[in-house]
Image 1 (cartoon, rainbow, N blue to C red):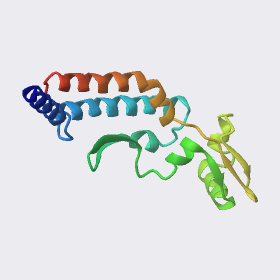
Image 2: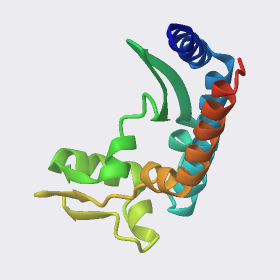
Image 3: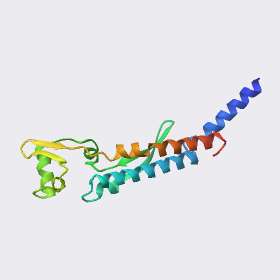
Image 4: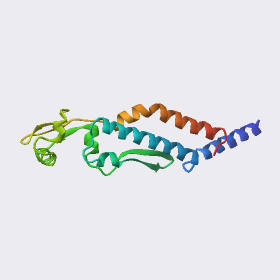
Length: 161
């Protein structure tokens, strides 16, 4: 009986080692997820017209992270201050409103498209309507994410590296 418990413990340790943070299988799976979801987010951003200079779309990428024993991949627009405003929307101050309108021209490039992204006035400020591009990408990519991680786990449990 003790031999079977020892075998079980050894097998679990092997599986755990295969799923360790430095596992090539895990890194490959996370790379696939990162590439796929960031590509979907770029498509979504273009579809929603969030491109004037291309800075936001070009900033979309993925980065690996490790917090203790947890390993994952962060996907987003890093170092682009208006990325969160496009994703979630929010209030803008009168100063921000005037600066945006000055950058976009008198009629406002965002308003010209007829989507009403910016509402308000130079005196009171306004509101920037949310145009999510990351959340829909994760929603569309969910089956791929689940299948990719599941395949990596299955491969590791069968003794893969």
